[in-house]
Length: 399
Image (cartoon, rainbow, N blue to C red; front, top):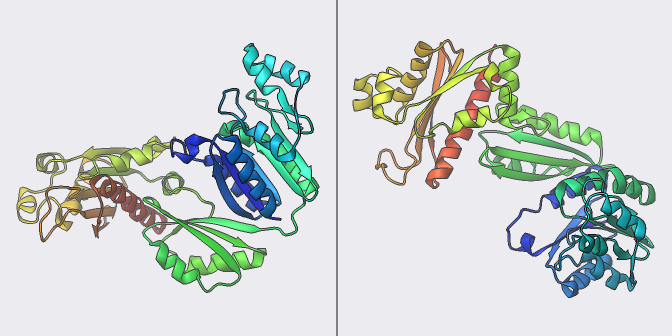
């Protein structure tokens, strides 16, 4: 059965809000064996919604609609659906009574209790706009409020059991989310592109690459994962979609190791990414944001000779910054970052985007050079991301 996800709203079309509902619905339907083949967005216009829904009903078997069920003038989804099915709207007193438990605004109650006469109702335990669904022959169409937490509650607890009962999926889809660091999406794509037993999607970001694998049977899925583990053992850090920060937290806490940071061009971005998760105090001692040479020399004990001869952005400087952390603290691991984020400060030898990162334990510090071609903000994010990848490798493969 083919599924289609439809969003209603000018704010989605204009980019004012991100359509997280579509991602959520698609993920759940895919897991349950209902392939999603179309995503569509329609404006707050009855004629456009009617035209779009008629097309959706022609090409898809399951149509999930979100948005446009509120009490304002631009909320016209139910009127559009009624027009598609050529059915009138009718006031439902029992719905109005439920809405009165949440609001006393009569205009809201009157608008939201006026519903297509044959719509089957899905209650909204959080908000005021109920959901609706219809089954027309071998097709099912469901309409949900656009508020994400209202939609999720209604979709999981009311609609999904109905869908599975009335339109059971013919095939079970096996899927897995894998996360990689310090690896390009093309390297993964080239490795998987000839694998006929699976389908996959690659989602690169500043934090690495996520890989979504779909397979018709568990054996094919497990075989693919094993091949990826063998090929990219130094890069595959999660088999369940966890972030690299989450994995690093677990590794450090499990191994009872501590960490200190020294940041120059990243300006504390690395530290911030780690402390956003609760429990960071169990392993993270802190960060020295040594933006100037003065602080590098006087706080981290980087020698003036190294700074003058090799420069602040160099292998020797980041190694000295990392060793300075071992002098200042009792940390087991250290990370040091220094680079040229731009737009000024670059040279022929060290262009903007040149970044050095040193990572390791006291007896095993390794420095790595990167050349990022991006704007200042992105260079800072890339520096933090690569440092996290190197840190994961250091702690994960330690004895």
